[in-house]
Length: 181
Length: 190
Image (cartoon, rainbow over all chains, first blue to last red):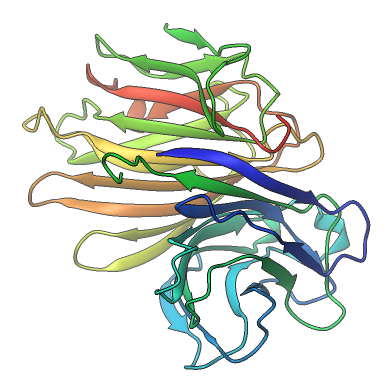
């Protein structure tokens, strides 16, 4: 299996609330998103949301396994929810903009027209003496079989925006035509 | 002391580029990679290892950035662990023992063929303004004892990553056959 860069996007200003990657080629087997980000103007620990093909309807579900540093927990959305979380950001303080949360997310078989689209993401942060920390693994599903041609990522809540320097990269993963590996 | 210099450039195609690797032929710890090129978007470190751990079933594989194992200040980390019986979460702070970014690998002397797997992701490693947060995913199985670890660890330093050092619990040596590889992850245009 080989991985190839498809797109990269980095926030340079202070008012970006969403990332959208469009015209995703349908020539790969899987997608991976790698990002590092923080958001401002909301309580710490809020979520980053993802949607596909511009669908903002109640066609998503998600679950997570979570560690707070003192306890483990699990949770999730209700059925038929709107665009779903796939990561959380560490802190909303303007004095702590050096703390970004990394995320690595996989979307398998994204171009298959017969499958609902499922993602898994791995993310976490630990802001040292600010004592804001968490580790997460998320699952989510877009209940739509359409091939994914665009991805939108946004900060939760009204008025929130990505801190300058936040970035997301999209990669395509190819598989062997011989082994299917 | 084995120190491995990363390749200055690589000609491989694709986004994942191997830039340095070693497989131990004798017991040793720590493993040090220097001169990490500043030309990639992210780093990924892949470890398959086993530690000589006396009577311990498993010991830590600790990743440190830009410093020797003996002086890893400024780290904090949050961990989510499962051992087949329970799921727990714990945290380490720089005020206590400094573990860097870590997971566990097998260390039992009676299990010579059991190696753990750990993957470290270091995003934005060339940034000079961001602290460095490492995502860690590790597993270890010893046929009756084992577990999985997920963690996020932050080094409160904005310096670009130029050196990686992989230490071990109690400084015990890694066994022969342990393998350590550093990959660069290209972005568009790199």
